[in-house]
Image (cartoon, rainbow, N blue to C red; front, side):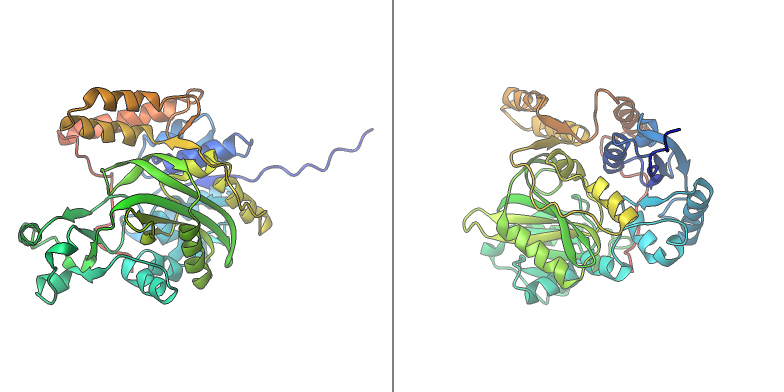
Length: 407
């Protein structure tokens, strides 16, 4: 009788925030490698629940409600399903990091410490470190300083960008082009709900957006990807809907320097604007979790989900210090919205439609649509449609979000 081969079965993985295309790309990446992947969320029609690569799904309490309730429901899933690897996706990552010591009793995960997250998620804190490290950032002021008349801008300093200290993806960001617009902006803020302490004001850097993402293991860089945003939603300040992998040494060096300074552990992504006039890279945003354009890394040969999986199982993974240049990826759902708004006031509608259709070529990787696994995209469209009808508006808000700030 032949001895049985020494085969180690793949470990069970749980992916949170199953409604997001980020989660779907993780499920798709690991599922194709025959790794048993399970999905979880607090809504019932999450797109990744419907993927052929999802072995099953679970519902947990909303991470935007009482945090102890969310953690208890997540721990119950981890324990009952005997999950070996947890890959948190969205802002629930922050809560999971906060309760990391408890969660690690039931599973393995690779995420930054809560202290690291609070630094990287707060523009005031990371920009202070960046300045010490010689990393360029835009000229920045506190919104409360402007309201209290402690600072005023000269005409040549406009346009300005008002943005939240915590958050990203285009949420809460406004462009201000003159002093009159600034006065109007503050005047129109709802006094009871708008909190100026949450906002900063930056000089807008005019140029192209380059994004860098890196995976670190206890202060050492294990993988990286850099790409340029070709189209975004909302226009000029939002998430990339079409991108292309492209090196930018200055931006890569800046993020590596910042993460080494923080002794980073886990994934981190950052946005840089390369100024048109000077070609200098300015760090404008840091995202201490998995990010919306995760698909770009996978498409360009940097399979972050699989690298994270191997780090969880083995404690480390091989270093991936290169990627394929010139690879395009596309977020179809976001691109539809981007083109829709572009067409409203654009005289070159035919050209815009041709551009949109031309990017359906076979060499473009889609975040949210795979023709051999169509149900996730169909259910995403269904969810969006239901919310549009419910709100009677195309401007729909997320299912839930944090009303305050992470502290």
